[in-house]
Length: 132
Image (tube, rainbow, N blue to C red; front, side, top):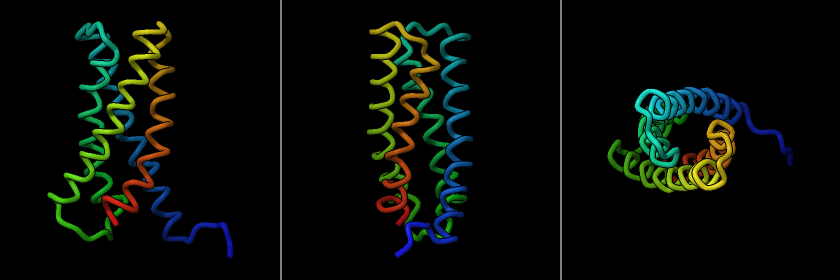
């Protein structure tokens, strides 16, 4: 048995990474806008708002680009995706809250730490639960 993923799985992983980069760029862009333009005082709250935008972009990209061969109703997939990402967004916001609001560390570095956690959970959850 080989540990190398099949060509279909490799293609899906590449599309997942592309989709994730786009969604993360949107998420981070909204976070920066919230912090620097709107002047939000809490990085955790600013990140929570930004997560909504990132989650929307991620869902659409996952449904129509990454897992495009998956079958399932839009509403069912949407509900599972929102539940999964809602949980992940709470973890993400919590990490950023601790990192920045409690420990006074740079919010950009905290965003990267929280995003690494998000990537670890989301592909598996999406592949085997949401877009199976």
